[in-house]
Image 1: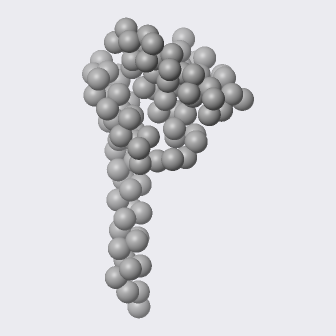
Image 2: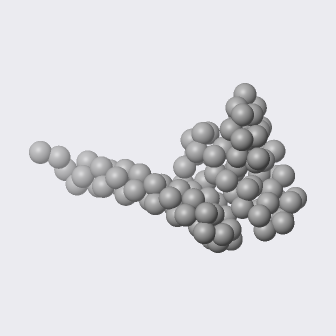
Length: 99
């Protein structure tokens, strides 16, 4: 019924969604385990494959928190500033996570 183009597209979409969930979950797990450098790598990779504003903002906040735990304050501030620029109307999520 469908040619390879449709099947390949469906497979790619499923793979992409699984990869997104996996990276986000790994980032959160690494953060909570104190593996902040690994969390930074996970969030950075996720931002490269997902261009959606809410995902980008969440990754920037989480990556900023990871930088903060590593005492890389300039990098943390840079990520928090980028998150605010993406969505300045959602200061609550940024403030709650930073506390």
